[in-house]
Image (tube, rainbow, N blue to C red):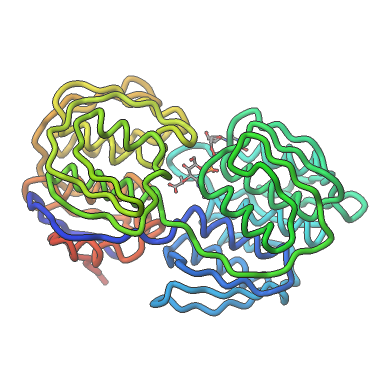
Length: 422
Ligand code: EPZ
């Protein structure tokens, strides 16, 4: 078992670069199934979640070459022969649902267990199943999973309106429609930056997608597409988290290799709350700032990203005044605040979607357990500003989304180590 130990109360300094985005890499891996040809992916984040996804592809018959140092993975989907996804791996990764679409579109059928949920919410897949049915799939359910078959062996284009904005739902239907017969129109789509980048790659390979990045996407089905090269965009959630790390520790740090505009509403809201930031084309510099309480509602892009809600909630424990954090996307993403309260934070839960934070209060090191990726990284930041030692367990959750995080933070002077207990 592994855990992190952090000695807090230190300022940090220097530069930290942002890795490729987990939530972009987890989309190109399923997308490459649509072709028989190789896909070379650069700026690839070798985090636990992307490695689980690659393992599912290898289990289906794909061959991959990995160069962790160079951040490159090359995957050859030509050998894929199975259409049943590995039950155990699927349970480890909610994002495995993304694989169902391309396999169904390419091979006419797919079998998988319901993907694992996580503590942040029930994570239903009803909008995926509705979409597949509209594209002509017949779905049968058994033993906690489902089997889908394209009627007549081939999917047919259709109109799909998402009753609720869904990121992976939009991406999955967009990929699936690439090989469907005729035209598909997707409405009320998510507009996250990862979506137009994925469409651009697929179009380079011969797909016909229009409108990705807007709320309406049109796809004209094609017979087949080629392979190609894909560069993973910088991780906007890592960038936002590192900005909050600089503000929390009152430090001047430079966050490099990021795309500030991909942070949407986060930067203007931080500046309104008193943050002093220098924004460059591909960097952000934080300066010592006197933070004032400012309430937020999480929202789909370009609104305030739910994946940055946890570090922002921590930041508000150190800001002057009272703020309301309204988590609109997930019903289970605020329970980690109990653990912050054991450190000395003053957070009151109103209901599963709302907490009231009163600050500033001093934090003291404690033993914590990371419930999910984003609450986990927030616990590291809490340990950095707390007096004394903090230990964090269940750090697989942090490794799911952040590559070698302790080494990268040590580069800024963070007193942190990964402890392995036999
Ligand atoms: C993506 O999840 C991200 N994951 C999440 O990041 C992120 O929190 C989320 O988008 C929102 O930005 C990946 O890209 C792999 P949704 P996704 O479908 O697509 C409900 C992280 O920390 N819904 O946009 O699964 C759902 O329950 C992760 O990196 C249905 O009701 O999220 C939620 O309330 C966590 N039925 C809402 O929609 C469905 O069929 C939005 O979820 C699908 C979704």
